[in-house]
Amino acid sequence: MHLQHGQRDEPVEGDELDRLGAIGEVHFNALCLKAKLKCSIVFPDKTGKDFVVETSLQPATPERSLDKRPAPTQIIAQVKTILAKNSTVRISMSVAERLTKDTRPAIICVFRIGADDTIKSMAIIHLLDDQLASILKRMRRASTRGRVQPHKNSISIKVPNASWVEASQTELARTLMALPGAGMANYAKEKIRQLDELGFDQARFTMHFSVTTRSEDDLADKFLGLSPYPPTTSISSRTDFRFRCPSRTLLVPAPCISNRTTASMVRSNSSRQSRKQR
Image (tube, rainbow, N blue to C red):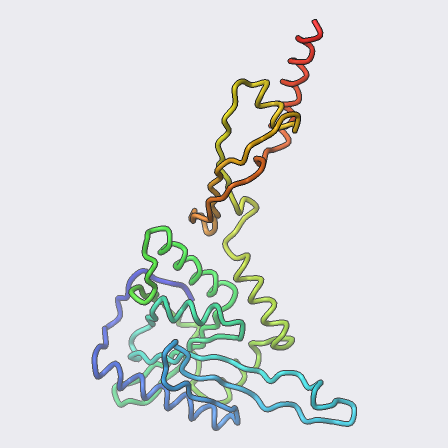
């Protein structure tokens, strides 16, 4: 599944869009009931989380007290319904941000609906790994272009043909229950890690600073700590997905320099001392 800048499918708008969306949400709830999953409707829907799907807690045993039972699997879901001949779903960037930053497994469940209002197939978009990286990339691109109002921007996701499956309770339950892997706690740790690291390479932060000095020798003394170094203004930025984003401006007590710069300053200082001795 990959993101697209635009949508070429046949558009559905207004009351018809709301009607198709309601059919999809009713179908999703019915599938969860048939699969014996606990499906809670989020109402009013203010953040794009249509449903919270949970499993039952594991039964208590003499070997496992109630307080030691693992947390139940819990999935947050946004449901979208599109025409059977379409393959692209659009969500607002504000909804995408909330879904991606929730540490629980988050999905977009997409239903294809026929002309007779029957559900033909479904696709589950799991917002982790490549899908998470794609959405983060779009948000960071918008930030670098000054588009910092996510509710006014949207993201389009094209679903490949191979991702469509039968819209059955068996397929839905099998897919959802596999999402947390080793458990909710481990899943949350991994998602937090990805949110922090996706899109960065080794050169994550760049810092620019200014130095005022009387001479090269004075500069060498400051870098070597032989003379006082006043605070200087530093502007830092981060680079992720090849987009440079402002980080912050701060005062630092001393500049960050490389080993090569240090060596150069040492050589300069050594030369100065040699000249003094002569």
